[in-house]
Image (cartoon, rainbow, N blue to C red; front, side, top):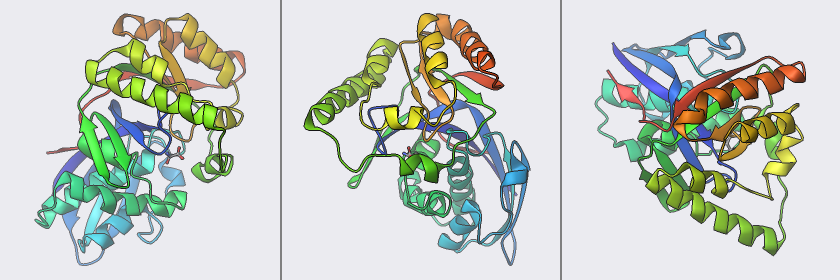
Length: 291
Ligand code: HSE
């Protein structure tokens, strides 16, 4: 039996829609795999009641098929589904790493990215690598049609997850088909600023670079309490706030010293609009780990 811990991730970071992603030190899924003649999946942990165990309907089943690696796969969810923290991607990335090792397929982590992304397609309708790439590779990742660029980073963040959910399909439905050139120019500038901030571990540059006028405003309308939580986080010292992935999770970037106050203020702000939430005080961290 092999065990993998695969981290939650936050995709987009505002200005990097479908391009940027970061691995988070916590929460994480734990995936255990054992060789078997047919794939069987069991799911426990956070939100497991919403996750199908049928291999034809589970991201991890698609990964086992793609690697021709039938196994008994036990998934212990630390990353709640439909939260905006790459829940299905963590399972897909973890299973890809575990099954690759279990069957000695010899693929690199980079080569496992498209395989894990295929699993993602089952959930979101499209194969995005912006969550599976950071979950496999760690740090900050830039996914384009030409491949993945990765850089290590340790930026502190607070990821606040309300007890509400937004489906990725719905969140993609509000993305505009086109954007004014002025907004595109702003977003390119912000994305470049954010990238430099990641390489310098500078939360001020990262926060400034998270601004996006194209996709994020459409999505915040789907998240009850977003504006209140954003304001509260900024007042408590966050250097930038945006929607995590497709939402409803909200990601605040900050200096380490402000993390606790920001987490408290975000939870309080959600509470103020009658929504329970949980805030993870974490940082950008390493990719999936094989034990
Ligand atoms: N980039 C994707 C989105 C991430 O925002 O829709 C969620 O799968």
